[in-house]
Length: 225
Image (cartoon, rainbow, N blue to C red; front, side):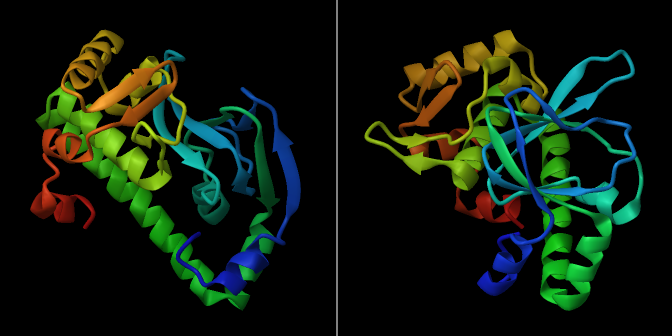
């Protein structure tokens, strides 16, 4: 909810109740009919979709300042994905009634929530296009650029992607096999674009990675449109 002015953000942080989640615990289970909203105040969560066979596919990661469960809170439908804590996570748990009252009092927050839902849908649409259009190395480069842009921070080695993800999780996020992601990361490392360690990726050549991702300035504008 970073699109609203600071007083409204402060008011939202006072809503609901504080709840802590231990690493690996569920915030949301796909198919359940709970309707509360989570505002993440610390930590990282993973959004996982379950197939009919019970397999899990990584759909997204969410961090401090993000909201989780807004669709069910707004439309009352069953939860559309599983959400698990990747480490210790702190949240504010907000009921639908409290959320609706807050929106009536702060219309700008309702507009910001609409923008959040729109941004998530736009990101999902980009992923679908990428899956059918680009090779694994390009899809992976785009994911790393996106994660670093939203969650990264500078270090002495380069820009550290600020979300700890394993290679299987990276593979699931771009619709690729783990061996294919391993090969792509190895090639990026050989080309001096990234440093890859367990659950850690550091971008050492931002311009080179943007070029690999086909996100030169003109294309980058369309990607963010």
